[in-house]
Length: 402
Image (cartoon, rainbow, N blue to C red; front, side, top):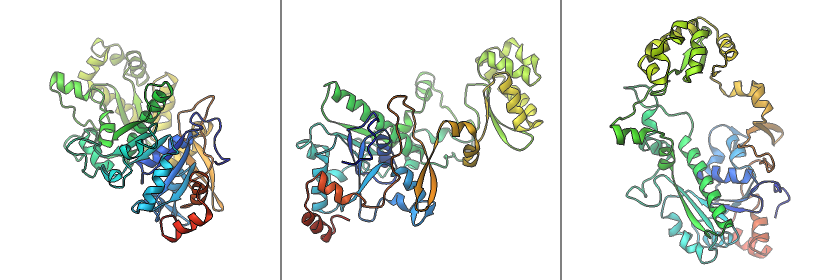
């Protein structure tokens, strides 16, 4: 349908219908599109709100060019029966549907999984919501911030007896997107191996964050331990912390392997700790955490961060700086790994992040940045739904298509 497809992408030939807005649904489709899928993004007549969020350039969010990359935009009024009919037709041509409306909305529009199954039984219908499609909380509004809180994730962030801290990102949305992609790829594999036809992928933001809790659940169930926030450390693993250096910059040091710990202690002039049997394994180091951290902090505070990093890298101790985005752009490793892709926005060049992982034989790519609203409406209606020019003109006059 479009010569700009990525024929080498692992998902080439897969067509995705994106009905989501803001972040979780769109990021899911961005990943699929990056690796070759054809993504048709259905936007409301006013456009996805992301187009107007955060830092703007020429009346469009710079974020949009990244999140909307490789997508074809069609603007439809989903609240109209005509718009719903068009989505139903489009779904019949697709392998995957992604939506992140509140549970029940798609059914109200006659676009739920059962509604579309009759025409396309192979459709992988992916649903992303705050609390999932079932259960007593299903209909609650579920933004990432709230879902991070109830998931148990937010409780663990920050310092004891202080308000929990959130990263300055909508991490709940992004983690849910990764889970949605996993579900879609597993469903495509099951279909490829004739183990299933279409199916529903039910992703909840709070459950996606719940999946990150490592040993928190069995520790509580088996020993009654409620893990607490631990500031810049990780409970039960020593030493791993963030330390301030003489130049007021911070470094992260992970010295929790037994042999690494010995090298670290010798490097900071504490051979007594390196050779102390009481600190020879992690269990012992946990007992002596305060003394170990005090020794490392004292050593770092007397040296500039570059010298701390050089000294510890020389003895193969994991260490690194805390980067902001400017630092990343200046770093030769980020550049060598191709993490910044250059696109044209108006008369300017703008960088957007590459999407990983890297595939040696079927790599992903950015073929075009997020398009103008409705840029592909006519093409999609003509080529996929066989609408005539008169049909399209009538739909536009009625306000169904923008």
